[in-house]
Image 1 (cartoon, helix red, strand yellow):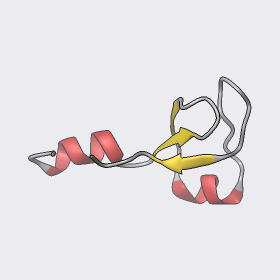
Image 2: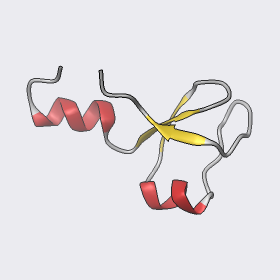
Image 3: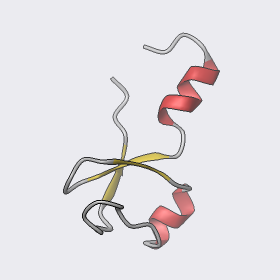
Length: 53
């Protein structure tokens, strides 16, 4: 787990993962909800937040 808030923000804030090709994308949550963000690799619009293990 992350020990301090700066590292937590760097690893998890505004980072989404493509559901098709599993590539990471940094975008604002409002753009992701509106469907304006596409994956760079596969051009898919289906994104999920990165998992916090």
